[in-house]
Length: 305
Ligand code: ADP
Image (cartoon, protein in one colour):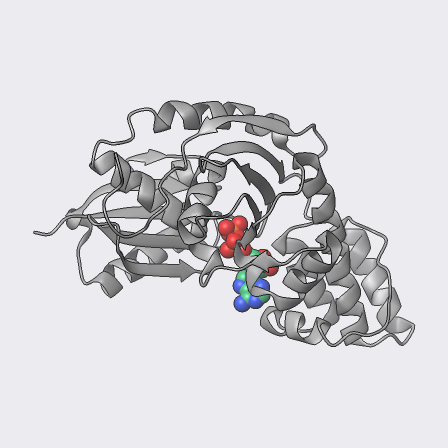
């Protein structure tokens, strides 16, 4: 029976699973649009990935979980923080990256990567919806536009409107007032994306802007979010082919390391990241991360010694 490893990112909004073979090749990935309220979404993404790979759970010799619900999964052998896994996955996707911006459903993170591919600093916002995918979801609902359409629509905005409230609830009130004033949905959505970009610029400045900068997470699939972030930061973002699975890929690569017994100290390093996560949350100073191991730079082929 051929062995495989698995990475599961049990996020607040979606669950993602990646399965790798023992050479590090991706054999399956799946995204389920259910968050961490229950483990239903995680189970669905695991089942889908197993079906795509055409294997059973018994063939998975190591499974690592990350994300909001990372400690809730029975199939997982160990869990790691989102910082460690997202950095690891992003570096595997874009080896030259020196900074990662990840905007998910309920948090946003900025991670600086040093020349060795190690996490050197990070900042995170997960205490308020501002600057997260939930902010965009709430305002798409307020405007009455499907989430998938809001980005392409916002890109057509020409007028410069400002939304001053960063709190999702107040911003929603402002959006409704703007629509009542006769502003078009397109212009209002343009302002919504400019507002989220402004929030992210603040998070980036806490760490210090670095390039090449890769964007991951579900919001990287929104072209207006990417456009406004590029404009606000004054640089081009690299968007990997499947930005939403970066965390699950990172978890799968750690599972591969552990299955090959090459990552004896990765868990210790991640414990230190975990301990400093609190300090890196909304409104608190930037955290200087311990040197979390994110050195795996290739998805295919054995890890160099
Ligand atoms: P988490 O890992 O926290 O569950 P994700 O990284 O999956 O979150 O990101 C979820 C967010 O991504 C949603 O809140 C939404 O804003 C955004 N998103 C997901 N799919 C799309 C899409 N097709 N188009 C635009 N935005 C999307």
